[in-house]
Image: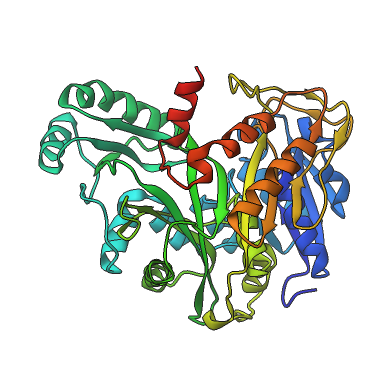
Length: 452
């Protein structure tokens, strides 16, 4: 039992559902799994104390069905809900309904989610907190004519972004007026379909940046800390694939300034629980610009756990239960280097999804190796959801050794019956630019172009 919380419903699936269930059990909390009909045999269903089916395979009819999730909490007597990442994790209305039903939402206040989940209002909040942004529109542009006017003022190339975007969707880089004209309606349409909000804004496109994010945690008593940073520069189509901590190209001084900027944003809105403030780091590796804040636990949180020794999910549970932060900023030390590769069920050459039955599974081991996954032998990987199978994480005393350990772990990982992108990572990690830290967010585009 943890303070006022006794039983936690995990409103998610896959590896993050398992991660939360394990953290709850470590703290003596009872757990409830919810699952769709497609996930009846999933590991999170087997390991939770109770499990409730909430609908058919389609996400909108199950994991995104707020009334069914709330009903599952009420029928099982769950007094708290952890949303994981994705699905309802950044849904302000869901957090508000939890509060109205006297269910503890293990995450920030609904007001925080609404304010920071909208890219336009988040940018305005960052300005109030004194954080530098890339040049761009302060609000959404109302039509193409205004977008053309603003783009000319900012200077090409610009990036067209959905105000309510996330996960790499609703984003388009445009290098000329002609490209803006052809992309504007398409991005608005994509944004409306994906997020129910077709508003877009413009921002200067940073040519060769690194993508660096700061992990923050804040309690209900006004205390806030940052747990160092993660480098998420290796991306494909704005989707992160390899993450590492600490960022190998910044100094301690830049880390401190970036962390202080993230804390300023947290303090500005009275944020509670954990979250991630994301920045673009310019090619000088000194100047950084606010991008957005993710008001949830991140997929890549394990690399921060490995270098700080802080269990981030357990910290979420402690904060939500009303505890003060158990750490001061001076307690946070970065030790060694950690790296994470997202293992997806996809063809390593074409990146097409590869669902199917797992025919044989060997998980790598050894000191400093971790595999967060929901897989087991003979499990049927269903085609209805994200292709993420698990996260392979390694920790070593420095980056060079960490890369070597990751390559060994990737070669040791065997998932039979389906295709995975493990072999793709081995090639990326062996690339000289990657090993020498001479790359930016366009690295994978260039790497794949040379391969073809």
